[in-house]
Image 1 (cartoon, rainbow, N blue to C red):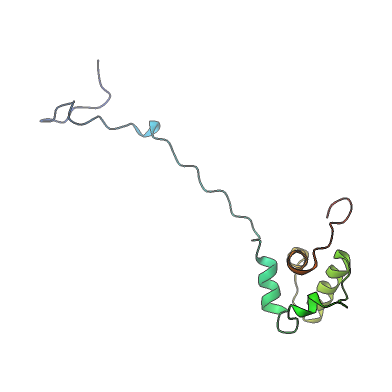
Image 2 (image 1 turned 120 degrees about the vertical axis):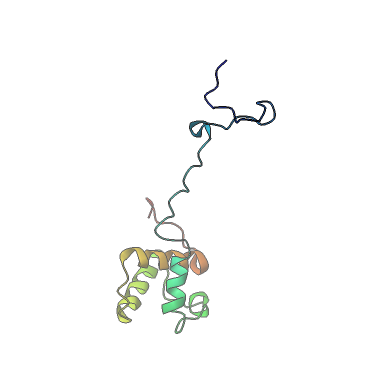
Amino acid sequence: MTSAFAAVPGKSETSNPPPVPAESVPQKKPPAAAPDITPAQGQMLYENHCIACHESSAHIRRDRRANSLKALEGWVIRWSNQQQLNWSAEEISDVVDYLDNRYYKFPPPKGGK
């Protein structure tokens, strides 16, 4: 039987197994690509830009103005424009999702989001 690897002089073939060819070594899969937006994106935006004026009590008071997911989105748009934050539609959606999940818990709109 012929080996693909040359024996090392002075070493017995039984003392050390031959090296494994590179093509037989299992390769690790590259890590999955990270999503562009982290789940905490909405929270981060809210805490950096809104919390100075809106403590959590604004969202849990009995007479809160947002009474639906659409109304909540309208308020986020209004105040992001008022503060000239230039948020993208995705950032607005992230903040709305954060506020809804954290405080409001509105039922999802019919037919999905």
